[in-house]
Amino acid sequence: MVKHIVLFKLKDEVPADKKLTAMKEFKAAIEALPAKISVIRKIEVGLNMNPGETWSIALYGEFDTLDDVKFYATHPEHVAAGKLIADVKENRACVDYETIDS
Image (cartoon, rainbow, N blue to C red):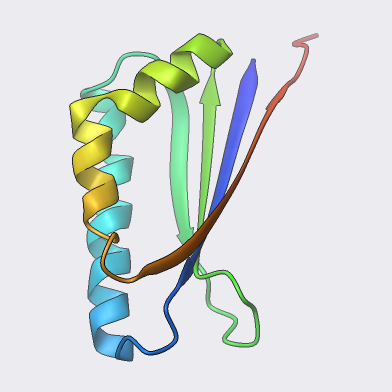
């Protein structure tokens, strides 16, 4: 199994209400993807509740293979979801790692 973890930092200069709206829309869009993209085993989006931290959004996903992650990443529905935070996003960090099911 491959675990896919992505963190998003939003621009400081964007008004809080605009960031919150974009974050909620992104969360809803990403969490609706398993019904549209069959390779997603699990996905969730967390909105950071700690204002003292740098990253605003955490995305956690599980896939069978790295090829499945790549398929998901380029799928039109995923690309459309990403556009929901494009105007407010400053930075992104990602780690994909493999685990062995026991």
